[in-house]
View 1 (cartoon, helix red, strand yellow):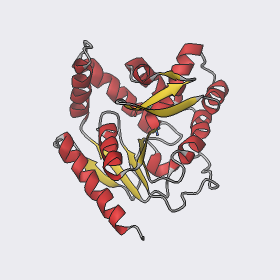
View 2 (cartoon, helix red, strand yellow):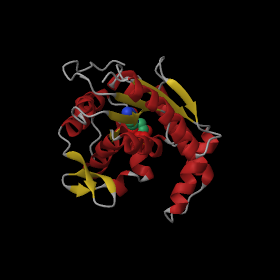
View 3 (cartoon, protein in one colour):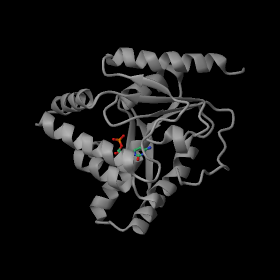
View 4 (cartoon, rainbow, N blue to C red):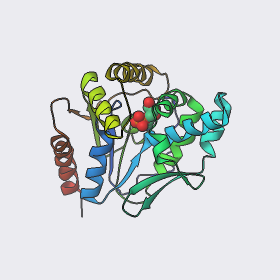
Length: 237
Ligand code: DC
């Protein structure tokens, strides 16, 4: 938590919902559904770390200062594409599929430990969505990026269950996968994300803890919808 918070980018009157948790806990699917239901904008912060990772792999950049520069100058944006929802663009090219590759996820976890990269991406995250109510997910959205969020959720599930979901997702895309390999890579990534010095994966002390191990996707969505419902209902009009 050593990153300076850019106080000048105020939250204003918009509602901010910050959802954190390990890979495969269901953050993306749940946040997308909540964003759709309540008309919030949505930011998958993992994809911006993946964007830096993809650029680093393409350009062969490994130095921390250079990685920070890459993150600060990254021509990254999300655009809504007809019938496809939000897609990620890097220098005008749709990189959404490349970002989901396992090698990019692994590299993302490495570049995410670099303080220069985290600092460069902080402003991007706080500016995102302008005045609109927003739900965002990641590892430090409730502890660092929006430590003043209106609602914080820590979403998790057992390692076995998360690895099973990821294996099914990849199989659905026609990829041949080994469950054990996925589980081991996930455990390695969890350990790196939790143990890094700068903004490690952690639950904010005031976060609502939601364990989705025994929940279906609909039940998981419902548990977060209930929390947001209360928040929206409480907002002064
Ligand atoms: O959620 P994901 O698997 O797309 O995230 C990829 C990596 O990015 C993850 O291993 C840790 C890092 N990350 C982070 O450090 N902070 C965030 N707010 C989001 C992701």
